[in-house]
Image (tube, rainbow, N blue to C red; front, top):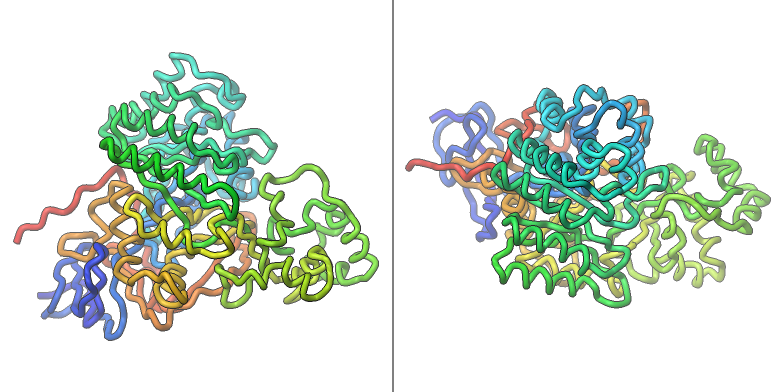
Length: 576
């Protein structure tokens, strides 16, 4: 036999949680052709002795709606073993959209997802209006990994209702009928379902709540029925995590899902302190599933938060008028100014202005802010918080933060652990990761360009959770299962996520001992020279998509086999 690729003598982690075993994997025509002891030749052979061989990772929660248009590489995700990314989450995106509403969606994505408006103006050709036309635009471009899309609720609402949708007026019967029709149309051409949000801090850059924020249950149901009309799909939903009380929003979505017969996945966050509202949400999940539902909560495997710094969208002084006077200076000049005693005194004695991005309320939560170094520590000891460090030095937290942002000539970063860091640890997250009704997600690749860099979580799972954490570790088989077959099932993509004959040849070859996650860094590779955070890793020997190597020892190749996935995919039928 002759194959395109043979990976030899690796430790195969099948994606289903089975015990890893030594063997070979052969690939032909983009699918896995043989597993076990493979004889024959190949166009390329990879010696995987001492290395893990896993399915490619599936990321359920990304926002590559724009980046998939203007770039052929979906980093950071593809640098961390992700071979399939689902976009359109949180109910925001760029389609459907009439020409007169471009500014509305740009304003929305700038506010909700921290994508600079100039990046979208320069990077989006707007060659579409309808959702099918948007998918055609995605399909026309080659890229490194596969993408799939959800129909986003807010653009749909604005497309159907115009300014009434932006103003969040109730939908009429005619509006609902049109939404249902367009949802069916979206699924017919390839959407995997639809996404919505009711999160308070999801606001446009101009400060308005997102169009879907308080949409009635009848509207959610109309869209869901449209999805079901076309054969079914997933409901992705963000409840109001800030309010803490999951029950009202989840009840609406769970009732619709039960009535229409669709699966649901929603964002779950663990409060750092106070009432454990997340337990109420999990009890609702258990009840829904006991009654025949298919509901999963998405959890992020490290703290949910922000990265702060003088090069980024936020820092502890970003709302101070005295800082804003110099905020436009180049970094080196700004750092030089901030090191002047009179400027330091003026900023430290100032008060923040009353307005700004909703997340900027957290930039002085000193007990939950930590220096983020190399390597980055996402489960830091409480003694390293800005508050604790300030006490040890005998200075105010504001002074400690001021000094820390000036480290590394102003390139330093601070991690804000907003959630998932209950009692200053990830122990609660450890318990949730082991539940069958909880799945990994929320990496947000393609969004929050100047605030977070969370799409690197697969590498974090395989280092911190499998290898490095002192207690509560996952087995490599369980961790890979959570990165592969589990999210593939939730998305409805049964053709990938496991190593078996006939399955899509999306694979990673990983040197687990050499696996290292590096500190995020700032790059200016967005349209118009826009800035974003990126993050790299060591230890990925090869990442393969549809049988083609897209990265070789961390270095991208010229291969661009990634395609748009149109619709849910059945498991392969293999004749023996």
